[in-house]
Length: 121
View 1 (cartoon, rainbow, N blue to C red):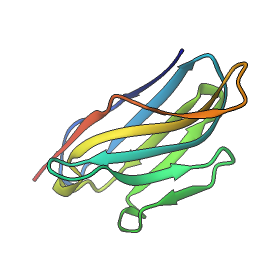
View 2: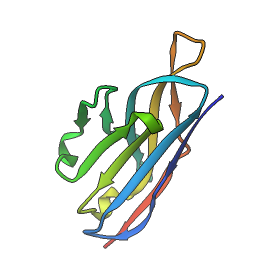
View 3: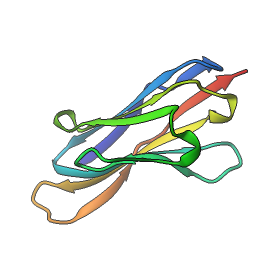
View 4: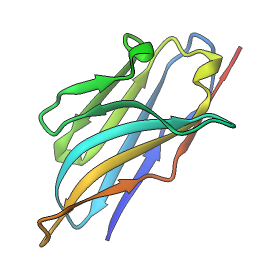
């Protein structure tokens, strides 16, 4: 079994910072792409950022410069550092990992349960 669990969400004032973490555990051989998505009330889930196994990061254009994605392969963990937060960043943030399990040559997408980020004005 594989589990993916996010942490680090919460309530912050506009202009503040938060750091989200997402850790995978279980029978893992390797993890390919790791990503962060978010879903605001009444809106579709959208990509925030993703990072390859080699560390190449991609961001949605309007978040560049404020958000930074990183990963620790030894810990099977991805991070999202969010700075200069705005009320419109309020959403449930989800991580997605593309994981190859032990004894399997295929990869599968695993979603975390989500963590709420609320930015007050």
